[in-house]
Image (cartoon, rainbow, N blue to C red; front, top):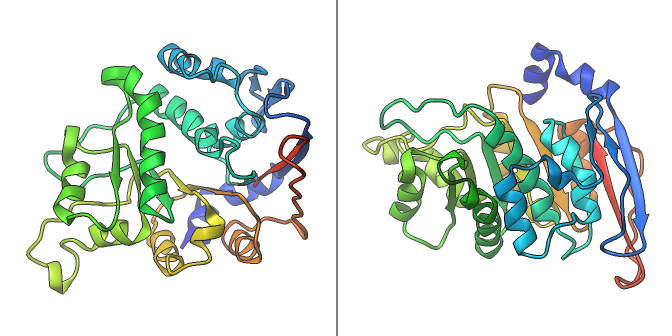
Length: 289
């Protein structure tokens, strides 16, 4: 389905022409990075946080994050511009904020589509995580940047297994729907089935993916090594429109490589990332299609 959607919109050929591979090694977590030029010709400042709304910059500054980490700088342009990417960076190097920040900037700058009555939630961004704990942490990161935007903030819902389904339905409906859905694959699939199967035929449809523009797989190495894989593939196979797919991972396993090549058609014969002693250097990579 995804290949057909890409072909129909002519984006697949465009993204092949825009193939970028960046491999960088930095000497510290706060190493300076040069100004970036995107694949679309847009130039970004060395501090990509300057692209964020002022309330978001102030919130980051209050947390002591006035300067982005290297992976946050390198990921900003491809994520903001809707390009597919595989982003590898060791644990605790700021991967979550690396996609939350550019997506907040993109959503805040776009006109929010009107909602029609009490229909199903129609998120524009879907973030899938392998665990309840990580999904909750991701939701908190979204809240930290969206909160300062007040009425203009993207609406975020977090849905996880191990909690009453009604609580997840309430999260989808709170505030008139959601622009961003963060969840575990199992609970997201359960919500999608509401009202669509014989077992739930009398239930109301509460979630649709027709408006999704971006899918993020956080800790993709874990997600693609567990039982979530069939659900993830079903989400993607059901997509009727073109979308951005970004994988964030601490390690690039064989399963991540296979999934990326089969789903994103990354033309990379070898992805080799090393992690030296954290205090000495951190290697990271951003592969954009």
